Each structure stands twice: as structure tokens, then as C-alpha cells.
Image (cartoon, rainbow, N blue to C red; front, side, top):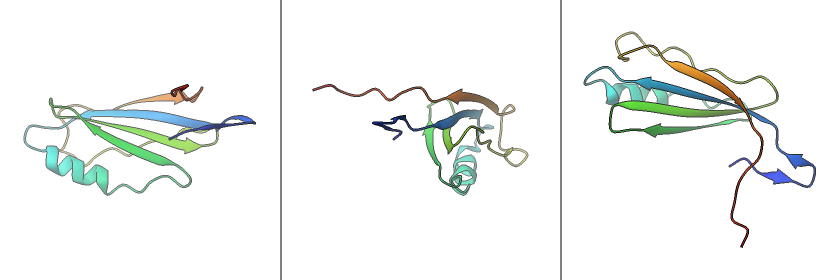
Amino acid sequence: MVTSDAAGPTTHDTVMWEVRAAPGRMPELLEWVGDLPAPPGGSADVYTAADDRVVVILRTPGSTPGRLPTPPEGLLARPAHQWPFAFQRSLGSTG
């Protein structure tokens, strides 16, 4: 989890990568995503949805957002979408 310290928020650039698996190819797509290396000094979280979608939240240190490569042909129902985000702050409980 991205955290804050006395000096302010930790700087991370974040990319949300979203794809829809081709019919019957979700297991292979998840295997491909699982084999990707984590970015140096960064992290990636993988989420799935019931409609064969996979979302990866990729966090990289510094000011240049990471990017995920294009999956092998045949695994996707449509091209991948990637959106870069700039980290602002973490929200947490106050009690």
C-alpha cells in the first residue's frame, strides 16, 4: 500500500491496465499476467471481474508511469486500455 510520511506522500505513478479475455481464454490470460515481472521498486495488483475482465494496478516509483506489454495474440477480446494516474494521497481510518 502507498503510504504517507512526515515529508508528504510517497511519489508513485500509477497505471490502470484493463482487458477483456477472449472467450475461454481467461485462465491463459491470468497466467500470462502472473508471469510478468514486478517493476523495479514498484508493485502490481491484479483484479478480475465476472465478465472476463482483468485489471492491473501498476505502481512505479518516480515520475514516469510504467506500462504493461501487449498480451499474446488471441488472448484478448479487444485491445488493452491503459490510463496513467498520479498518486495524490492514501485514505484510511482515523480511529
